Image 1 (tube, helix red, strand yellow):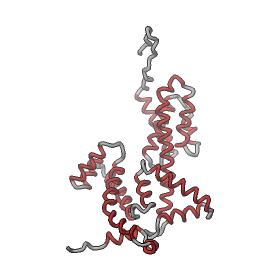
Image 2 (image 1 turned 180 degrees about the vertical axis):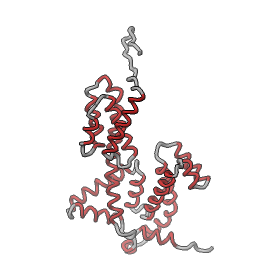
Image 3 (image 1 turned 90 degrees about the vertical axis):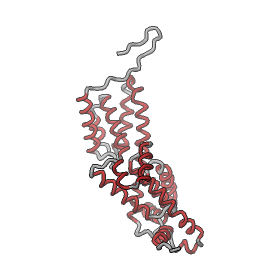
Image 4 (image 1 turned 30 degrees about the horizontal axis):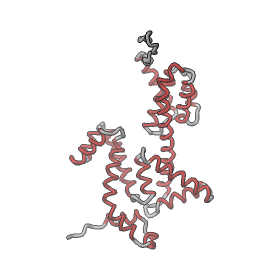
Length: 290
């Protein structure tokens, strides 16, 4: 072990020695079992990973009540970082090693929780509307009306909060970004079905054991595949994020002239025909022979 420099009085900053491998394996198993029993993350990989890292830190600090404190708590993913920060106060000698990581995890968990809240609203709106002829903006206010019993003040405040949440989380989550564009009539509702089909296809291919590179090569022509592999290699986001972003870019280019035409139409027409219906009709029109 490195000693303090006797001449300068500098202290050693050597990290805590890692536990033996069998002990590390036991820690990992205990943390996974606890998080799985609480259904932490609901399929959110970043949220699960953040909570997992916190669990490892807690057990490394010797917090034997980790499982009990997390399992009995109603919102384990909100509680876990706070729990870790509380216990670090009892270990000042180790604080400088884990505190920066815990503060980073706290921010990640907060973002993931907000993302889950927004995604729950998206699910309610999408499955609550009858068909693509209903504007999603109208569906949002119908949803808020039911939620707040028609109280316009509460509806307005909640609408502002939701829109701000959409804007903040669109940076991190492709589903939120897509739905936010649908809500603002920047993209037609038909693209949400493209998103759903793409997710199902990726899930099936992953079940067949295909890697991200294999999936890209299987689904795309060589020029697009090379671009997508380059984007994937240069980022730390999941494959589905890269593919959804790619399809969204192409779709926006495709419908840009149609949206421009729709926005120049008179107000009466736009009242009777919503954007999604207009885009669908134009996309389904047969190509004119020159």
